[in-house]
Each structure stands twice: as structure tokens, then as C-alpha cells.
Length: 577
Image (tube, rainbow, N blue to C red; front, side):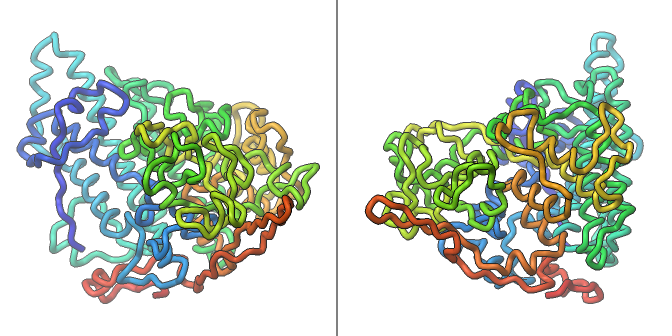
């Protein structure tokens, strides 16, 4: 395992802490800096820390230049022979895993986090002493306090990132080595794979450590972290809620059938439920924001946002350029290549949306779960000043170049007010964690440990059963007008379908079907679309239309450890591959 040090120089604009909520994520790669500068200068130290945030997942471009949804039963990419085709054809292997941030990237992140902890250790690193000058002048006391508070939080972030990267690696590959510090070449030769039990214990231990530290951070002089949140100049930073959310996800994944011979581990479910309950009881987050609004709101007013990637996802028009139906008004789409990298929602996904009272197969897009029309554009929808024509022969129809392959267009995260020719942009939010996921995690964990019962874990307000937690998500404080409570009796299929709908296109489905051990079913089904024909003014709808036959083999739930690593470590056990 070869890991290179990456110490990056940062622009002066960004180095003045923090002139705007985005500035501390701005990176200038033009000038490299060395260890001697980092230990001697607060600005360089801050730059080294902030670079860690650029390693958070960017789900808008997760496989090649497209979304991971296209490598699951959620969607199909309209790019012929794109990167997701390797997943969908079952043609990936230990030489070629088409996932952007896989083995080497994650271990580089582990090393970067460990390196920051090593270099910023005021006990063991005697070179790191420039801050002492703050103490010698009374006028600098406030600056000294602020620096100590910042340093404490930077080190907490670094521990979080060690946990995050190890989780990502374990999620992808299963049994992988734990690397807790910067290692020498000789130490690297002796790395061994850790079991799921060992990995869960290691990651949860890191998270428990920093979860406890956040309470102390609130009372630290000079700290900008209060009441579970950062101030407006530090939006996007890791919080106690984010650490608890990662802990919750870790235990839920570890509890899932993939890692437990086809059933749920009740002890891990209980741990996941308690971590989720800690977030719910904090009263920091809520679902009091519209489903459409949460796709774009990056401000402090978004009560769903626990952590998002804003280091790499600034205001842009990438999603609009990639996904706008090309038949819109010229002021929106009069630009070459529009819709040439589209994520096309599948009929497989559409089938998961509830059919409400008044539904008819003759009008299959009406009277559905309200989230349907806030996630997916359908034939006849008004978009960019024009009605979408996704029927055969329509201006946005199947079979045309740079058009949908499924009869549907992506609406989620696509802002229909962006005018491409004049280069206008809009904010987009890629969630690492949001509150609705926590509620759904809680529901799945409690249900599979105890059933559809209240456990007394929710102590702030009324206790919640799995069913009640799901209905908070479905009804969204009255904002999902028209939606009805989930049907009963509650089952795992209903819980999973709710997750499929609520978290569509947020990078969950690909991993969920694997941890549930159902990918061999869901990913082997033909990917379907809605084939619409227009004859004499009458439209006919065929939801059985096969877009693509896909291939998944049992064992593909985990990624293959790269061939180069298996060559270096012949005693390691390769996954199915």
C-alpha cells in the first residue's frame, strides 16, 4: 500500500478565517508547502485541515461524470458505454472498478487525517509552537483562545475523517486494514485485514470520543460552535450531529443481512437506534422544509441538513446542463450538448411511489405520492417554459440523441430557473447526512430489533415507533399535502420502499440493496421505462418497456480489492472476485 503525502498551499483570501461560509474550503493547488511552514504558521495549518473536506463524497459525479443512481435500478445514463455500464453489465473486476473515490482515494484520506493529527499534536510535536506568542501579550488573549478552540475542533474533524474514510472502505470492500496513524513502509508491509467486528469497534470508538468532545467545545472560549451548530461563517463543518449520524449509519450497515448471514444483528440495530435517538432528542433538526426546497437550500435555515459537501459543490449549472430536456425554450437550452449526460429515472423506481385515491393507469403520472413530481419529470410536465414531450416522436422522446432513455427526466437537484446560455448558476446540496435518513434509520433499526413498538429512546417529546418515525418523513409537517400515512401492518418491504422514495438519487439505493442482500434480485431485473405512443391524439402507456437487461452476480455486493494490493499482500482474502 503506497500513500503519498499531500500538503497543499492555500490562497490568502481563504486563509483569513472565515470571511464567508464558503471561504475555508477554497483551495489553491498552485503552490505546495512543506512541514516546516505548516508547523510555523496558523494559516498553513488551517489550510492543511480544510483540505480534508474536499474528500467528502460528491454524488453528482460519483461514477465517471454521472450519478451512482445510474448503476442501480433507480436510473439509466443516456451516455452510451459510460462508466456505469461496467456495473450494469457485470463487467467490472479487481483491475477496473469504475467508482471515482475508491481504495486509493480513501486510504489517502486516512493518511491525510492521520498526518494532521500527528503534525498538530502539541504534546509530541515540539516544533509546533508558534501559537505560544499569543500568550505573551494580553491583547492577544482573544486570538489565543480562538486559536485553541479552532485547533481543538480541527483535531476533532480529523478524527471524524479517519472514521469516515474507514467506513467508506469497509462499506465498499468489507474486511480491510485499519490504519490509525501515519505508517512507515515497514509497517505497511504488515497490514492485516480487520473483521467487521473490529472495524465497527474502531470506528465507533473514534466517534464516541469526538461526540463527547463536542459538548466541551461549546463551552470553550473563542469557539464558534454553540447549541449543536456552527455560526454562519462556518456552515458546512462537522458537528456532533454528523458524528452521531455516521455512528448510526455504521451500526445500521453492520446490522444488515449482508454482514449477518441473511438476517439482522439485533445488538447492532439497537446501537443504531440509540444513535438516531440522540439526534432526534437534540431538537437541532427537523423536516420542516419542503421536499423540493431541501434540494437547493444551503443556508442555515435548512433544518434537514446535518452535513453536506460544499467544499466541491459550489453554485453551478452542471445538473441543469446534464439533465434539462432539450425541448425547452431557447433561453434555457440553447447551448450545445444540453442533456448529453442525463440521469434518466426508471420505471422500476416510479413503481415505488404510492398510487393515491383517484389514480388511473390511463393517467399514470397523476395522483401519486407528492414526492414523485418533485423528483421526476414526466411527459406533459411544464419545464423550462415548454411542455415535455417524452412520447415516441416528441421533441423530448425516447430514441432521440441527447434525450431520455426511459421516458422520464430527472427533476431532483435540477433547478428549472437556470438559464444556460447566459451562464447563470444555482446552489445545489449534496447531503452526506440529512435528518430524514436518521428517522428512516431509526425505523429500520427498531423494527428489526423489536418490531413496530416504542422503545422509550425518544425522550424529547412523544416517543416514536418505527411507523410513527416513517410518517414524520412521509407527511413532512404537513408540507407533503396529499400524502397519507404508511400502510400497516409495517413490513421490511414497506420500510425499504419508503427509503427508496425519500432518498432517491441521493446515493443510497446502490448500497442499500447490497446491505439488504437483495441486489441479486433488484439488479438482475430488466431496467424498465415508460414507452408512450401518440396516435390520433390518444396516448398509450407501456410501463413494461425494457430499456436494458442488467447483470448482477451474487458476490458483487462488495467491491474487489484492487489487484495491485492483492499482489502486495498475498495472504489477504479477496472478496468473491
